[in-house]
Image 1 (spheres, rainbow, N blue to C red):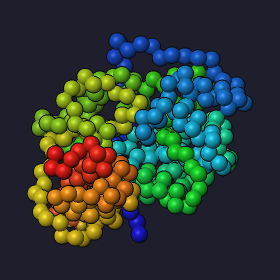
Image 2 (tube, protein in one colour):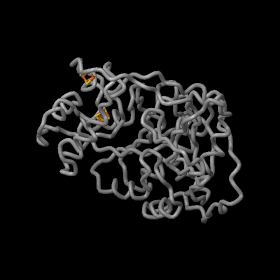
Image 3 (spheres, rainbow, N blue to C red):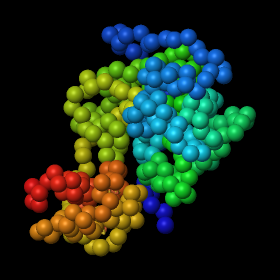
Image 4 (cartoon, protein in one colour):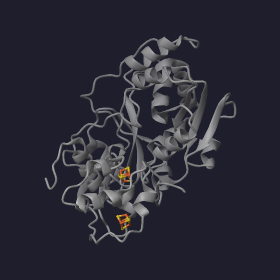
Length: 342
Ligand code: SF4
Ligand code: SF4
């Protein structure tokens, strides 16, 4: 049974034009440079380059070298470059892939060498994306992630169910590693999508890391009714009020909205949609039932610690119940951090 949620993907508006470059503020320091590495540099040297180039994986904000170091001990590892964005309005990594798939592949090669992966794969949103992949992609297989949200988590889960060992890194991190190895460039920029119903122009912007959100938002030509700005995701992003906040390597989108949607909450009708949507094997309706008891039993709050707060359960609930809040609360109870009713 397919997990996750089928959402309307709104990527085309931001993919219809090329990535634009936002001028870097003069206050930011010049990017760090190093000597390029030899083509056949040892794995340890590539790892060290990822470290000193300060490359951060946009998938989860983890430094790339730490991730690759961890992967070294995995048995028969397949390294997967995630070249799509699971968020329905974000297309930043997909745009990087379309712009220069050869660079992403070169970075994947270097990363696979660094962590001694035995095979490499490119995961893209759909088969159509493979037309951007160069013909001479020796030894790299292609995977399609599908269009269910959250696609990256579902992809990992599918892989785990097969019992195979795989490591996932972002397409932007791959491109940054290629630059660090071949051009000696530290990671100093990232591509960010500006979208949302408060933006009259949806666009992917190449941005120097450290640029204030305000400067990037301007590329979206905001409508006067815009009242909320969120970063991180159009589904469960974090709303911000300080537009001077800097863009980081893990900032994949900035969403401008006219307001937050309001939903009326009704009682649970027992449809089971939340359970089917959850990519982490949690049964949100059952968690809700436990929380309604006077003494919730922590031993019946199954898997709540595995919640990734993707909000799939809340999105599909026909009763408008904000299930992710219930799961969060259950997690605290399970950890003993919150007593009933607090
Ligand atoms: S319970 Fe957590 S992981 Fe499962 S769908 Fe809800 S938010 Fe996502
Ligand atoms: S989706 Fe909503 S209404 Fe359906 S079982 Fe889950 S909590 Fe109940």
